[in-house]
Amino acid sequence: MIYDFDKIIDRRGTNDVKHELLVDYFGRNDLLPLWVADMDFETPSFVRDAVAKRLQHPVCGYSVLPKNYWDVVGQWIESHHQWRVETEWMHFIPGIVKGIGLAVNALTSPGDKVVIQPPVYHPFRIVPESYGREVIYNPLIRHDDDSYEMDFEGLERICDDRTRLLILANPHNPIGICWSRDTLVRLARFCYDRGIIVISDEIHCDMALFSHKHIPFASVSSEAAAVSITFQAPTKTFNMAGMVSSYSVVPSSELRRRFYSWIDAGELAAPNMFSPLATVAAFTEGEEWRRQMIHYVEQNVLFVEDYLRSYIPQITCVRPQASFLVWLDCRGLHVGHDQLIHLFVDRAHLALNDGAMFGAQGNCFMRLNVGVPRATLEKALDHLHQACEKAE
Image 1 (cartoon, one colour):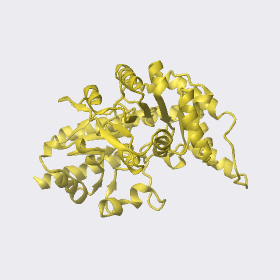
Image 2 (cartoon, helix red, strand yellow):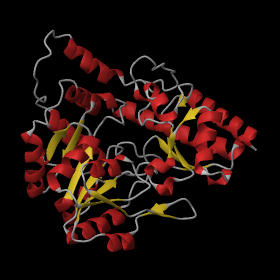
Image 3 (cartoon, one colour):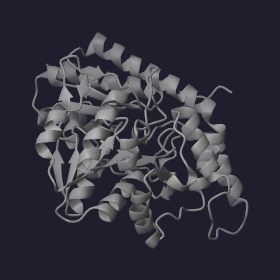
Image 4 (cartoon, one colour):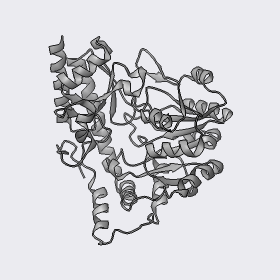
């Protein structure tokens, strides 16, 4: 079956975040939204059909997980990431950002330190801070060729006996890095030696691009398995974020006891009746859709690169190794960050994620969502091109 990713879908009127909150976040509603990290492609029919089939039954009562749920999830992880996980390692969680909040509360105390590595997904900072934890920063090292690496000397400097957690974006958001095995092994050894728990957010794990490979953090060594809590979900890959269907994988029995008992005390591992059905449908019927979607996203990334090179060479794009998010380096425009936002929002009428929200290292960068029909992407870049010409 050939899937149509060029189809334009009007999402207005569906209470979608990327339209409904434009005024709240950008001060105007006449913007082309390329910010929120869901895609504008149709959620695949096999996911929607699974939900529709359940709704044919007239009672929406309490439900349990389908009997094959964990088998399906485990088989997907093993076939796609060569990581064999045991059923008892896995638990449903009500969303990955929520999962981070659950882990922070279950495994740390107010005043404990949590490490993040900016520029990085902003809830990594917001969630621990909101619960009274001290967030400490170990910025990634950026090289002249736009590659990034972890700063292990920096980790040595900032971590002490109050450091309890490190939150890892794997693949990285917003840069789209698939971390190498050597990097993950080194991080695991560092954290194991210091008793630091690693929360590995792997929500983009099934969207590796351009022949890159995602490596689950917990799979790289016994040390990684001993200190890791892994969060994964089908929601980004199959464009079903509103289903809120996520799960954790914890190989360590001691960590499972501490984390899962805390979750279970509040029945926080009880999903709604639809999300497990959607997950099973995605993981059993979705491989061909996933492959075609990834190819389309890759072509969108190449389109952005070619367009910028031809028409807006002052802006360059860091090619993502995973996901549908593109990190735009706008420093060549030689404007301040506030002026950059004015250019995108008020002149180009575009809503992108402001790079500074991911940390000070994101100043003069913007995050672009290319999980859209190509006509939408071309329209957005044309707007930006015209705005840049007028600003010269």
